[in-house]
Image (cartoon, rainbow, N blue to C red; front, side, top):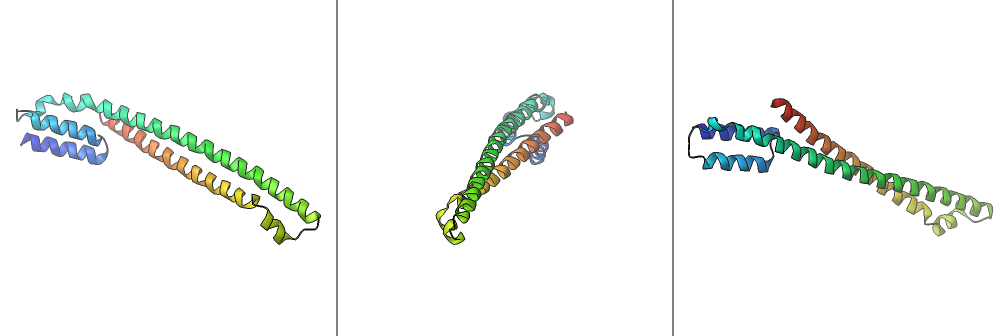
Length: 151
């Protein structure tokens, strides 16, 4: 009966995000392989492995933060290139207007405006990607903090 109670506790910890799926499987296998019905005697197994789950969360959060920084750098690069390309396109268009060309012909002959928006859209995608990764890193760190507070 103790094994069932211990497995229920582990399942609850897994659902709360306190332990990872791999940690759950390892602990479950240890409980099931223990020949004694008194699993409660070896409570150190769970608390001893808990810091591993915390350090895994912190390591994974670090990976998300690194990827977020990379995405943010790409966002800044795309936005900067798009801005310079937009300025070039505007100066070129003003020059063409001053030389007497029609606006329709200027827009048709200048792909700079389209490329500007491509860079802006790519930058926006990188920016959103950066925010999503930072949010995931924050969730992992919050999980680590809450599990550390429980022990």
